View (tube, rainbow, N blue to C red):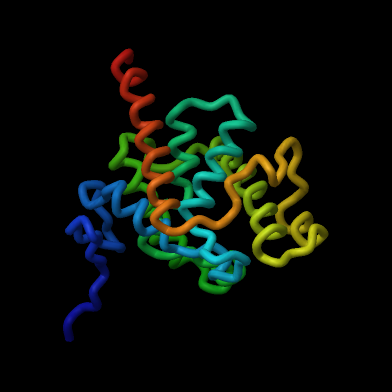
Length: 202
């Protein structure tokens, strides 16, 4: 019998192996395109457009940057914190708990390939991961209460109570996919441009 196909063809022409992903097959254009078309909350959000993982990633990086003293690399890692989902989609937390370790194993390999492609550590340190997760929870609280039909009490229980961040300061109104893709790409390129002088000084 023929082995099951474990790769995906990207619009860039790259062929990304999900079981053994190579950094050479990772392109930011594919990431931005994919994340802008993956819906958070399984698409169960209010608005004319899905609330995309690309828009969520922009919001998390913004919250992270405002809440932390961080390097440009830290901000880039925050922006890319859900980047593997451009290939494997956004699985909601309750279903991740049911599926178990297989999903996490694939996610970790993709994360490593993506980070190495852009000259970042294969994985975040625990301290940095915790800081990004905190910003992620703040974003999830507002997404839950503004877009996904959660009560304030439910959102507090699952994500905690945000401090120093208000809905009015966030890019939370769902954007068309092409706009979310454009903004994600622009933010990535801005951070990359800031990294070049820093790396040249080393």
